[in-house]
Length: 203
Image (cartoon, rainbow, N blue to C red; front, side):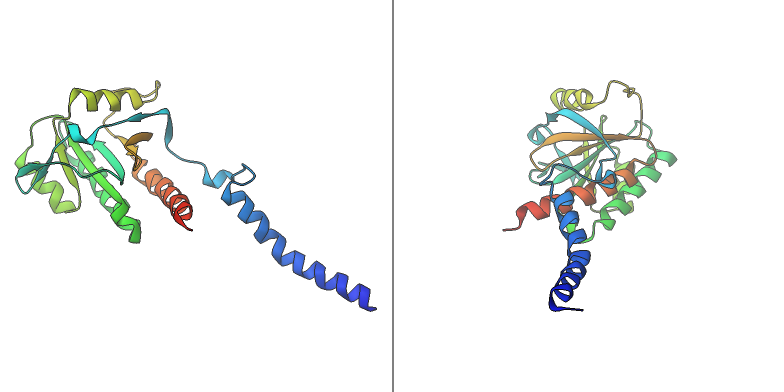
Protein backbone atom coordinates (compact mmCIF):
# COMPACT_ATOMS: atom_id res chain seq x y z
CA UNK A 1 0.00 0.00 0.00
CA UNK A 2 1.52 3.33 -1.04
CA UNK A 3 1.58 6.43 1.13
CA UNK A 4 -1.46 7.99 -0.61
CA UNK A 5 -3.61 4.88 -0.10
CA UNK A 6 -2.55 4.66 3.54
CA UNK A 7 -3.59 8.29 4.09
CA UNK A 8 -7.00 7.66 2.49
CA UNK A 9 -7.53 4.61 4.68
CA UNK A 10 -6.57 6.60 7.80
CA UNK A 11 -8.98 9.42 6.93
CA UNK A 12 -11.77 6.91 6.24
CA UNK A 13 -11.30 5.37 9.69
CA UNK A 14 -11.38 8.80 11.34
CA UNK A 15 -14.55 9.72 9.42
CA UNK A 16 -16.20 6.46 10.45
CA UNK A 17 -15.96 7.46 14.11
CA UNK A 18 -16.27 11.24 13.91
CA UNK A 19 -19.12 11.77 11.44
CA UNK A 20 -21.81 10.07 13.57
CA UNK A 21 -20.84 12.28 16.51
CA UNK A 22 -20.96 15.42 14.39
CA UNK A 23 -24.35 14.45 12.96
CA UNK A 24 -25.74 13.72 16.43
CA UNK A 25 -24.54 17.11 17.68
CA UNK A 26 -26.27 18.91 14.80
CA UNK A 27 -29.52 17.01 15.37
CA UNK A 28 -29.72 17.64 19.10
CA UNK A 29 -28.43 21.21 19.08
CA UNK A 30 -31.22 22.30 16.73
CA UNK A 31 -28.76 23.97 14.35
CA UNK A 32 -30.34 22.26 11.36
CA UNK A 33 -33.88 22.44 12.75
CA UNK A 34 -34.43 18.67 12.99
CA UNK A 35 -34.93 16.64 16.14
CA UNK A 36 -35.32 12.88 16.39
CA UNK A 37 -38.84 11.64 17.13
CA UNK A 38 -37.63 10.42 20.53
CA UNK A 39 -37.21 14.03 21.67
CA UNK A 40 -40.78 15.08 20.84
CA UNK A 41 -42.81 16.24 23.83
CA UNK A 42 -45.39 13.88 25.32
CA UNK A 43 -47.64 16.59 26.74
CA UNK A 44 -50.12 18.73 24.82
CA UNK A 45 -48.48 22.02 23.84
CA UNK A 46 -50.36 25.17 24.81
CA UNK A 47 -50.22 27.52 21.81
CA UNK A 48 -49.94 30.33 22.50
CA UNK A 49 -48.73 29.88 26.05
CA UNK A 50 -51.00 31.14 28.83
CA UNK A 51 -49.37 33.31 31.53
CA UNK A 52 -50.27 32.85 35.19
CA UNK A 53 -49.74 35.26 38.08
CA UNK A 54 -48.36 33.54 41.15
CA UNK A 55 -48.98 36.67 43.22
CA UNK A 56 -52.70 35.91 43.12
CA UNK A 57 -52.13 32.61 44.92
CA UNK A 58 -51.22 31.86 48.51
CA UNK A 59 -49.98 28.61 49.99
CA UNK A 60 -50.32 26.73 53.23
CA UNK A 61 -47.06 26.96 55.17
CA UNK A 62 -46.96 25.53 58.71
CA UNK A 63 -50.64 26.19 59.22
CA UNK A 64 -50.45 29.76 57.88
CA UNK A 65 -50.51 31.41 54.48
CA UNK A 66 -47.54 32.47 52.41
CA UNK A 67 -46.65 33.69 48.95
CA UNK A 68 -45.63 30.76 46.76
CA UNK A 69 -42.15 31.74 45.50
CA UNK A 70 -42.71 29.87 42.24
CA UNK A 71 -40.96 32.41 40.03
CA UNK A 72 -37.97 31.05 38.15
CA UNK A 73 -38.98 27.39 38.60
CA UNK A 74 -40.58 24.72 36.49
CA UNK A 75 -43.90 24.15 38.24
CA UNK A 76 -46.22 21.14 37.95
CA UNK A 77 -49.75 22.13 38.96
CA UNK A 78 -52.17 19.37 39.93
CA UNK A 79 -55.71 20.65 40.65
CA UNK A 80 -56.94 18.19 43.25
CA UNK A 81 -60.43 16.73 42.86
CA UNK A 82 -62.87 17.75 45.60
CA UNK A 83 -62.69 14.18 46.92
CA UNK A 84 -59.02 13.30 46.93
CA UNK A 85 -59.25 9.59 47.72
CA UNK A 86 -57.37 6.51 46.51
CA UNK A 87 -56.85 7.38 42.83
CA UNK A 88 -55.91 10.98 43.66
CA UNK A 89 -53.42 9.91 46.34
CA UNK A 90 -51.90 7.38 43.94
CA UNK A 91 -51.23 10.20 41.45
CA UNK A 92 -49.80 12.36 44.23
CA UNK A 93 -47.43 9.53 45.12
CA UNK A 94 -46.36 9.32 41.48
CA UNK A 95 -45.61 13.06 41.56
CA UNK A 96 -43.34 12.45 44.55
CA UNK A 97 -41.48 9.79 42.55
CA UNK A 98 -41.26 12.15 39.57
CA UNK A 99 -39.64 14.86 41.69
CA UNK A 100 -37.16 12.46 43.26
CA UNK A 101 -36.27 11.06 39.83
CA UNK A 102 -35.04 14.49 38.68
CA UNK A 103 -32.02 14.10 40.95
CA UNK A 104 -29.82 17.19 41.08
CA UNK A 105 -32.49 19.20 39.23
CA UNK A 106 -34.98 18.93 42.10
CA UNK A 107 -34.29 22.50 43.15
CA UNK A 108 -35.48 23.75 39.75
CA UNK A 109 -38.89 22.05 40.05
CA UNK A 110 -41.86 22.69 42.32
CA UNK A 111 -45.05 20.67 42.56
CA UNK A 112 -48.19 22.59 43.45
CA UNK A 113 -51.20 20.61 44.68
CA UNK A 114 -54.13 22.97 44.28
CA UNK A 115 -57.56 22.67 45.90
CA UNK A 116 -60.45 24.89 44.86
CA UNK A 117 -61.94 24.60 48.38
CA UNK A 118 -60.80 25.72 51.80
CA UNK A 119 -57.83 23.74 53.14
CA UNK A 120 -58.68 20.39 54.72
CA UNK A 121 -56.23 19.95 57.62
CA UNK A 122 -56.44 16.15 57.49
CA UNK A 123 -55.81 16.07 53.74
CA UNK A 124 -52.97 18.57 54.05
CA UNK A 125 -51.26 16.40 56.66
CA UNK A 126 -51.69 13.33 54.47
CA UNK A 127 -50.25 15.05 51.40
CA UNK A 128 -47.23 16.33 53.31
CA UNK A 129 -46.77 12.91 54.89
CA UNK A 130 -46.46 11.51 51.36
CA UNK A 131 -43.90 14.16 50.46
CA UNK A 132 -42.86 17.17 52.50
CA UNK A 133 -41.62 19.01 49.38
CA UNK A 134 -45.13 19.51 47.98
CA UNK A 135 -46.54 23.04 47.85
CA UNK A 136 -50.19 23.12 48.94
CA UNK A 137 -52.52 25.81 47.64
CA UNK A 138 -56.24 26.41 47.83
CA UNK A 139 -58.98 28.70 46.55
CA UNK A 140 -57.18 30.03 43.44
CA UNK A 141 -58.32 33.39 42.15
CA UNK A 142 -60.79 33.64 39.29
CA UNK A 143 -57.94 34.92 37.10
CA UNK A 144 -55.76 31.92 37.96
CA UNK A 145 -58.63 29.46 37.37
CA UNK A 146 -59.46 31.10 34.04
CA UNK A 147 -55.83 30.82 32.93
CA UNK A 148 -55.86 27.07 33.62
CA UNK A 149 -59.14 26.70 31.76
CA UNK A 150 -57.79 28.57 28.71
CA UNK A 151 -54.78 26.28 28.62
CA UNK A 152 -56.86 23.13 28.26
CA UNK A 153 -57.08 21.63 24.77
CA UNK A 154 -60.53 21.84 23.20
CA UNK A 155 -60.86 18.05 23.18
CA UNK A 156 -60.26 17.73 26.92
CA UNK A 157 -63.27 17.86 29.19
CA UNK A 158 -63.03 20.33 32.09
CA UNK A 159 -64.40 17.56 34.35
CA UNK A 160 -61.29 15.36 33.93
CA UNK A 161 -59.83 14.88 37.41
CA UNK A 162 -56.33 13.71 36.49
CA UNK A 163 -55.16 16.74 34.55
CA UNK A 164 -51.88 18.54 35.09
CA UNK A 165 -50.22 21.74 33.94
CA UNK A 166 -46.53 22.42 33.32
CA UNK A 167 -45.55 26.05 33.90
CA UNK A 168 -42.18 27.30 32.68
CA UNK A 169 -39.79 29.47 34.75
CA UNK A 170 -41.22 32.61 33.09
CA UNK A 171 -44.68 31.83 34.47
CA UNK A 172 -46.34 30.50 31.30
CA UNK A 173 -48.48 27.38 31.10
CA UNK A 174 -46.74 25.61 28.23
CA UNK A 175 -48.07 22.04 28.36
CA UNK A 176 -51.00 20.10 29.78
CA UNK A 177 -51.33 16.41 30.57
CA UNK A 178 -54.18 14.09 31.44
CA UNK A 179 -54.57 10.45 32.40
CA UNK A 180 -53.02 8.11 34.93
CA UNK A 181 -49.74 7.99 32.98
CA UNK A 182 -49.34 11.78 33.04
CA UNK A 183 -46.62 11.82 35.77
CA UNK A 184 -44.42 9.51 33.70
CA UNK A 185 -44.93 11.66 30.60
CA UNK A 186 -44.04 14.78 32.59
CA UNK A 187 -40.91 13.12 33.95
CA UNK A 188 -39.67 12.41 30.43
CA UNK A 189 -40.56 15.87 29.13
CA UNK A 190 -38.91 17.58 32.10
CA UNK A 191 -35.74 15.55 31.60
CA UNK A 192 -35.60 16.79 28.01
CA UNK A 193 -36.49 20.40 28.88
CA UNK A 194 -33.98 20.60 31.71
CA UNK A 195 -31.26 19.16 29.47
CA UNK A 196 -31.93 21.79 26.83
CA UNK A 197 -32.21 24.66 29.31
CA UNK A 198 -28.94 23.63 31.01
CA UNK A 199 -27.24 23.57 27.60
CA UNK A 200 -28.51 27.10 26.92
CA UNK A 201 -26.93 28.31 30.18
CA UNK A 202 -23.47 27.06 29.25
CA UNK A 203 -21.02 29.81 28.19
